[in-house]
Length: 210
Image (cartoon, rainbow, N blue to C red; front, top):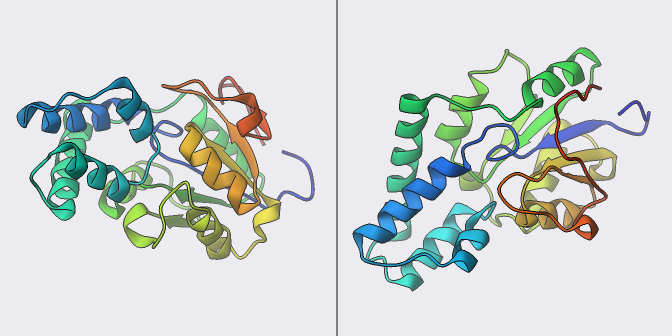
C-alpha cells in the first residue's frame, strides 16, 4: 500500500465492506419461494456479486412473473428493511482500512452493483469524505463482470485505472476488476475464490492499514 504508483483504492460494497449478502439471498429466496421456484446452488453462486439487472432477468427466466423494475424494487425494499431491522454488519477490518487510507491521503471510490439509495445509506454511516466518488449498478450501462463500473470509478477519481487497487469478494467482481486493468485483490466471503482470478487473495482485511 506504500507503493508510490498506487493512486486510489476502488471498493466493492456487498460482502466486502458490509456483510449484506445474506440480506440479498433472503430477499431473492423469498421471492422464488413465493412463486414456487427452487434456487439451485449454481444459481446461488451465480447471483453473488452479479449485477442486479442481470439477476432480475435471470429470475424472469426462472419464471418470476414480474418486470425487471418490479423485481429490483422488491429487492431494494427488502434489503433496505433488513438493514434497518438488523443494522449494518461491517466486514472485519473494512472501516479501519478505509480510515487508514484516508489518513494516508489515498482516495477511495465505492463501486457497487447495489442501487444508489442502498449505497448512499451505507456511505452515510461512514465518516464524511470516506469515499471521494461512488458508482452504483443503476447508473452504469454494463454491470459487473464488465469493466465499465471500475473504469468509471477510476475516471470519477481522475486517476488511471492501472494505478488503482480493487478490493472484491466475488468471482464476478474480480472479473470486472481484472478486465478493467486495475490491480485486483480478492477477499473471500461467502464463496471461495480461485487464486488465479486475482493478483492476490487476502484472507481478511482485519489488521491491514495503508
